[in-house]
Amino acid sequence: MIYSKIIETPIGNMLACSVTGGICMLEFCDNRDLASEQIKLSEVFNAPIVEQSNEIIDLLETQLREYFEGKRKSFSVPIYPVGTDFQKKVWNQLLGVEYGKTITYKEQALALGDLKAIRAVASANGANKIPIVIPCHRVVGSQGNLTGYSGGLWRKKFLLDFESAQRQMKLL
Image (cartoon, rainbow, N blue to C red):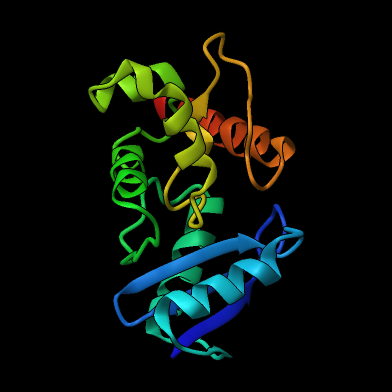
């Protein structure tokens, strides 16, 4: 069974889905592909999605609230990302990008050991179904410009500005 719950955040409602191993999806409810993503998720796990929370989703909800209150810089909720081995490698690398900092797609590709993989890295970031927890919003274009975010660039800007402001407050 895949558990699910809608979680309210300052940047919009998000649908959280969890299996026994961890959070497998956290998507903005206004995502036009949400229904098809739910179908794919159900097929991957060969299980129905039920509207019922569990301990993992409850923990995620608490940690998201703490994050948006400026009390949490990283997440400890277990995650169970669904994707190819390459995508999982890219997402795992994102977990090391510090709160309030950004990297470029080029820097991310270099950190993964293959400069030629910039487009593949960008594509993998775009396929991230657990945004915020897996912080793909911290990846920017080569000139520091905001590029691509499944939740919309306004949300990416909000998250980066929020983290930057929180980081600056801690430095003062």
